[in-house]
Image (cartoon, rainbow, N blue to C red):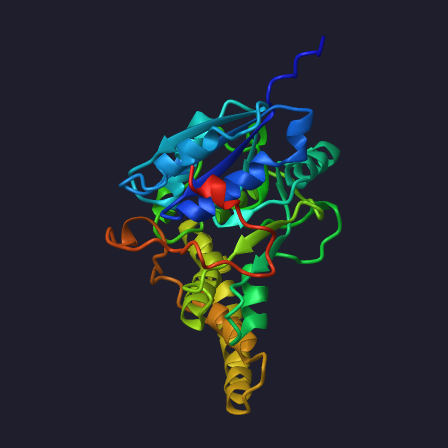
Length: 338
């Protein structure tokens, strides 16, 4: 007689907004995790579209989940990335939570590698690398987009002194702030809810770790593989340190980051101008760095990427034919039709 499996220790959370095809691809990658061969886990999907556009496809596809994976699908009609994450956290019944974005997919060993690194380090939060999958037809500034959407700082396995974004991370809820909601609702439209949380964990003397083999793919749609998008995001990234300092009342730190931003804008702005004049292949990289400097200096305008800023009439962000040829195999068509 086979011994019963122990209770689940980890819940995978996928917040989603109007990306039904991407969501099914992300779910499919979770279904295939080798971790589920010997252990149980939970999966929580949170549809943040007011119309619940992904609820029906997700419910149908959940029927294909392995027996060791319990799937819960929630609807969070209040727009905002923090709202979606908070609803998921409220529903979690395990000590550990792994976040996977709806435009990401995970190789089969992803969850096992996150769990292994967490067991070895007892860290508050574990992060893993992100590789970029671009549509094949995107050729202009391709190297810039590959680097922009990836996360691979070439860190060694184990404890690290810094933190990254929530996508592809494993959180130990017992080592995080006990308050609820966990994510700051003020960031619902701008993003940065994860930076705020992890900054607080850092102040609590929490520890971060890097799982070098827990890679995921980020599938970038054509609409985002444009300089107009990445530069706006670069400005918003640059604003992060200055805004956190201001909101925390640390005005000396705010002045420091604004001075850093002024220096970056001056130096990289000149380099960008020269690089554009002679059409250097990597000129977009310098523009990105100048934009981050600008964000540190001009930190108060909010750039809106999520939540209520998304028009109710917006079309789905990823067409089913918009996939990259260098990515892992997409979801089987028969699953998409279920």
